[in-house]
Structure formats: C-alpha cells, structure tokens
View 1 (cartoon, helix red, strand yellow):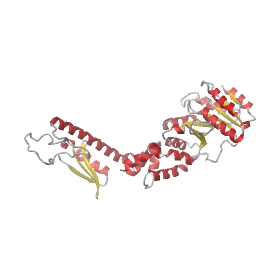
View 2 (spheres, rainbow, N blue to C red):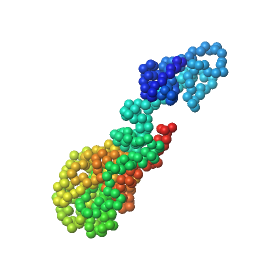
View 3 (cartoon, rainbow, N blue to C red):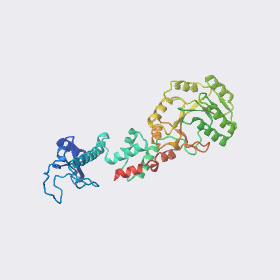
View 4 (tube, rainbow, N blue to C red):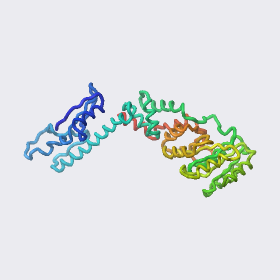
Length: 387
C-alpha cells in the first residue's frame, strides 16, 4: 500500500492537497497536529487493499503482519482463519468505515467554508446554539462574536448577557394591565387563548376586584368555546358577552363601558386563513381602542412562529404571550422570533391550572429557560465535540 504524507498549515489546506494528489477517492488513514501545522496520511482507494488476497496459498506463515496490510482501527480485529471471501467482506466493511470517517472529517473542516472566518471552536458554539433552537442566522451571528470560553456554562452566561440587552419583556414587578384598556387575545387555533384569557381575568380579579373587568368572546365556531369562558366568568363573577360580528362587538363594548378592563377571546385563525385580515380590521374599527396580544405556542417550530407573527403583525399588536412553555423541548426559537420582530413579551404560561400556571414575562426568566442545557443535552453534546 502506497501511503503518502501531506502537511499544511491547517486541515482544510491539507485536505485540499490530498484531493489534488489522490483525487476524491483518497482514503484518509490518519491525521494529527505537528509542528508545521496538520499532517494527514492518505492513500488512493485502489492502493488501500492491494496485496491482501494476492499472496500465494503456500506462502509461509509470518508472526507479524506484512507491511502492506491495512491498519486496523482501534477496537477492531481481523478474525483468525478467514478465507478469501471472508477477507474480502472484512475489507469492504473496513473500507466503508474509513469512508465514513473521511466524510466526517471533511464535513467538520468544511464548516470553515460555510462560515468564513470561524474557527472549529466557533463552529462548535454555532452547533450548540442551533441545538437550543436558534435560527442559523442568529446562531452564526452569536458564534462569530463569542470570545474564548471554557465550557457551555460560560457560553450560556455570555449569550444570555448579549441577548438580554435586546429581548423586550414586561419585567417581573410590572403589571401591563394595571392601567386598564381593551385587550384581544389573538392567534391560531389551539394555542390556548381561552385558558389564557381566564388566567388573565383571574389575575385582574385577585389584584383589583371583579367590578373592574368584563369579558367578550367572539369564538362562535368552536363547540363549547363560549361556554368554557362563561364557566370561568361565573366563578370569577365577571360579566361575559358573545359577539359574532362587528356590530355585536361594538354593542358589547358599549354595554361594558363602565369597566376599565375588557378581555376579548377571539376565534382561532390559521396564519394562512384569508379571513384573518378581516378579523384584524374588525378589531381595528371597534368603538374602543383594542390592543391585540398574540399568543405564540412554544411547541411550534421557528418557521411556523415566524409565519404567525408576520400574519398577525400590524397596527394594534401590542405584544405577545408565550403559551405552553411547559410542553416545549426548547425555547431558543421563541427568543429568536420575538427578537427578530422586536415584539415585547407580556406574559408566559406554563400549564393548564388557572390562575397558577401564569406569570408576567421577564427577560431573565425567559432566557434562563431557553438556556436550560441539562434539559436538552447541549452540555453533553459540547463535551462530546470537545473530546
């Protein structure tokens, strides 16, 4: 077997030399760091198994393998007494493993082509941020700026500090509904608008009393939607009205003119529903100024959340409520979306209990949960990569 040695300043340049000399089918036998940079030992695929089965059957046994025998990866061995067909099968298996190792090595070093200017350390951070749920763009942006750090905990502290200056939330000690107003909870079907409306109502009643609040439901499509809200309203002793169209909505708003806070539970609409624009227009033409609060399901993908925000954006969108955080495997995509669209997060829900599983959003808590490394195994992934 003809083994050739290639040395270059870095792995990418060394791999380029290998491909230039031996072609795309070159077999990488070993690579290591040397004083000149990186050393790669390689041979052509046609030369890799040369001589394995060519020895005559009467060749004398040897206590040591011939020089042309291919190296055996650690943890592997060639069984004794194999015949020609067994030997060929073993060689094919070994070739397959070597090709896999070569592809992994090349993919690792091609990251520097995808992300110009990044070291392997930067690429490692980028992959960790992607695992947390951040988009490729934001992960790349952050990875390019992360200083030399030792371990995922240091990375978490740095990224939280960087993001914390830009993520907008109400803060734990603030009540965004304290001054009153008309608030419509909007969003796709199944994001938890009705339950969240009940949680908001309970919060207001506990802090300011039932006499300051009224509720309106425009969800006349979902079976039992208004009845569910009426059940909550009965427990809280708060009036609730149904509204099927714009005239009903204005009539209901006039009927509760003496209440300083009104919560509107709207019908769920897909971000691709053609009627969504009309819903937004109706709320915009209401007899009292309506602030829309967009409910974002934390279990949705980043792409879906981005579509939802774009569809529901526009005048009157005051902020978002992140729902079902307890069901989400990761939260980086939520942080990514609200940061990208510069939307303030007002509240977060963490379960079905009313009103317990509900809290005013704070940047620190949101980022803490987004960077819960133990939950999604980023720490283990980082350790494996570092090894």
